[in-house]
Image (cartoon, rainbow, N blue to C red):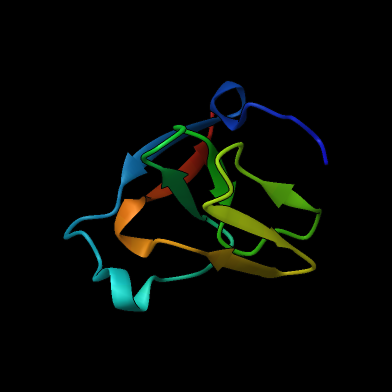
Length: 79
């Protein structure tokens, strides 16, 4: 896994209104921020990705969210 701080590449803005944790949106510009460890991961990661606490784990275009209530949905725009 690559340990890339996406905050150095993108500006992140919260999705308003906040989506229901039971049906989180996905897309190329949609990212999830883990509220436990503050790591940001793309909602459709094509490379193997995981946050340090294990709440977000994915790769190959799929992401598993163990506790959706501990995730903040944000949109990313290149700096």
